[in-house]
Length: 341
Ligand code: PEP
Ligand code: MN
Image 1 (spheres, rainbow, N blue to C red):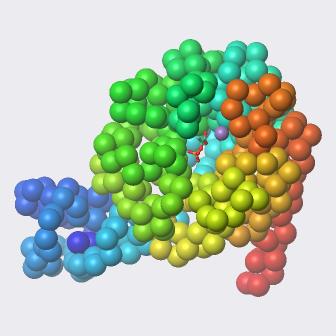
Image 2 (cartoon, rainbow, N blue to C red):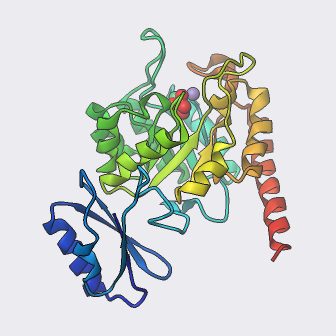
Image 3 (cartoon, rainbow, N blue to C red):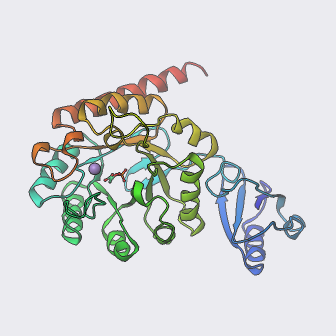
């Protein structure tokens, strides 16, 4: 159910509607918009009778939402969501870049890469302290020690930290240190973890599962939003196909598909999407040209010694080139659009 308030509805009338929703045992999700407030209703098993709301003062209409997702959809919120992370904005006019190593390996390695990232003007830093590894014998991350190193990166360079939360057991810890909590591809349908980050007060970056459809991705985001956390960033990172020239097949067509249905920002990860550094820049260019809200890439100054994902890590010079190209491509498209109006 979606309740659309009249443009002139007062705050008291909105409060009244929220109270009625709660008294019926449902959960209200008010979404103020540029011209009017819309209120999503969740928690109901079956259809709700619109008559409960249509007679209330300030209500324009009560609409049954037949789509499986409500809060992520544009029916509820037409305007694009902008997720604020410190001074950075994910969504909106400028593309973001999130960069850093696959994993936090040591204090020196992390600081050295952070210095490179900060020197380019990029303000979001990535690095895993808890790593989801295919083999139980591979490096699993430094855990809390890694989170402390990431905190040091924020203090020293002012970079905001994007780091993965692997399970509900360590969620409190990650929430304490992270600026953005990342849900990895392997956890996209870990519903208890999605609920947990939905209760967090930090934005969440949700990566697409390896074989997830658009609807499955949006429904995973819906789990997070249904708990009350509306700061969700989607991330395309490639899906499994028959193609064996690439680690995953980066599905850039999901960018406009998401934007058509959802107000949430979507970024692209061409590092995991390709698995090879020489493919990362071409696909980062394509992602920005396709309209993505930004990209996330892995960078390493000594990838030959990296404890995970060395082959896909950009070298420092490649990373500088990528930052310039992302800005240049975005500018060309923005200027071309500006001449249309
Ligand atoms: C990552 O970004 O560190 C990662 C493990 O990616 P994915 O979950 O997409 O495999
Ligand atoms: Mn990685």
